[in-house]
Amino acid sequence: EVHLVESGGVVVQPGGSLRLSCAASGFTFNDYTMHWVRQAPGKGLEWVSLIGWNGYSTDYRDSVRGRFTITRNNNEDSLYLQMVGLRAEDTALYYCVKGSGSGGPDYFDYWGRGTLVTVSS
Amino acid sequence: EIVMTQSPATLSMSPGERATLSCRASQSVHSNLAWYQQKPGQAPRLLIYGASTRATGIPARFSGSGSGTDFTLTISSLQSEDFAVYYCQEYNNWPPETFGQGTKVEIK
Image (cartoon, rainbow over all chains, first blue to last red; front, top):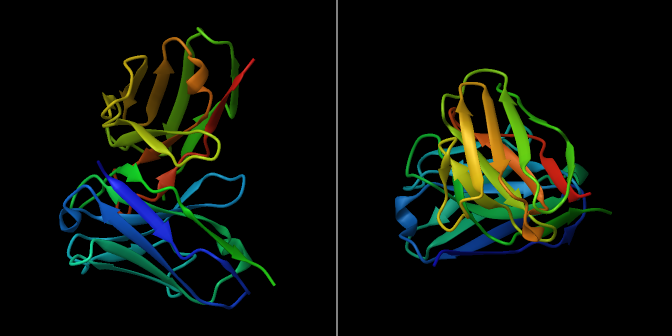
């Protein structure tokens, strides 16, 4: 059974930094693209970033590019999101999400329960 | 940039009724369309991919149809556990960043 468990969400001041982690199990982690998707309180879903199976291919939504960095450790079945220069509009529940494939456009077949990031002074 | 538009925003239905949710893309996404269900306090769950293929464990009362720009999610007979928010997502493009704004199915 696929499990994705996020951690690292806290309350942080504007301009601060944070690193989110996701522990994956139940599938061959290094076979799949992984994503971060976020959801602001009471709002819809917003894709944030992806990383290809081998870690070399990454992409970001425009509003976080240059501030967020996605990485993975295939030896430890872990996904990360380093966030710097945090803004109030980054406040959201961040989900670790498994992509359906290893490259190219894919849908999201498994989701973690999320970790809450609150950016507030 | 593709825009995904879901309608209606809210659907007020009674248990046992048939629910029809719409998702429209601003340009063709072929059949690269997924539907997700999100219940309060829970993570989204994949329902449908490839516009019409049910994900593992999804009941047969959920069906998807459409291709190109117009898609439909149908729940043939609403059960109490089906009252939730439903999102569509296109994955024809890279990165797969486009979700619809969601349709809330609420109890009438």
